[in-house]
Length: 186
Image (cartoon, rainbow, N blue to C red; front, side):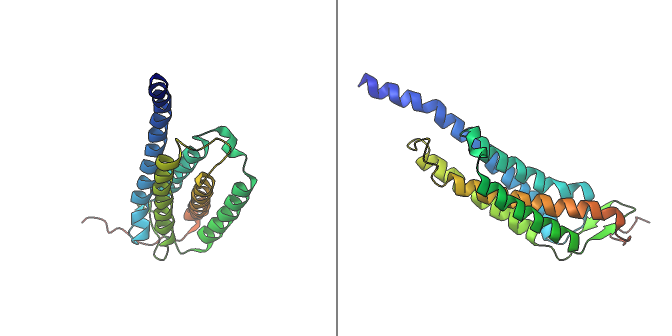
């Protein structure tokens, strides 16, 4: 009986780490969704807010990758797919329509709902990751990644797409002709 209690106590710090990591992942993904709502709803927002969803998505993906071990970074297929997603994101950011109010430093993406959709997809991966971690993490052996690798690939691809898209749009903003998006108060 004493051995059983000791084993359950040995598992407790690992579960606390699982909860902390998954909490950071879910909060970052949820914040990415919240910051992507204005662009998904075609509303005007400050140009610096264009960088928040990809930064938060990158935070969620990095925590998902490095939580169990830094050995998870040694996944060439994940990085190859992420590079492809980033290139697709750069292409989308380069060719999507961007309305910019150069005076008020405000931008609107009139036909670009994919940022919000990809952020929602990231949030779904985070929720699936929480379920996977809570159900399988205590019983999983270190050599068997389970669904963790698939979740990490999905999250890094989503983050890479958002980073590429926002980066290309960000560098285009100074060169886009001015359009009145905010009426000055009289």
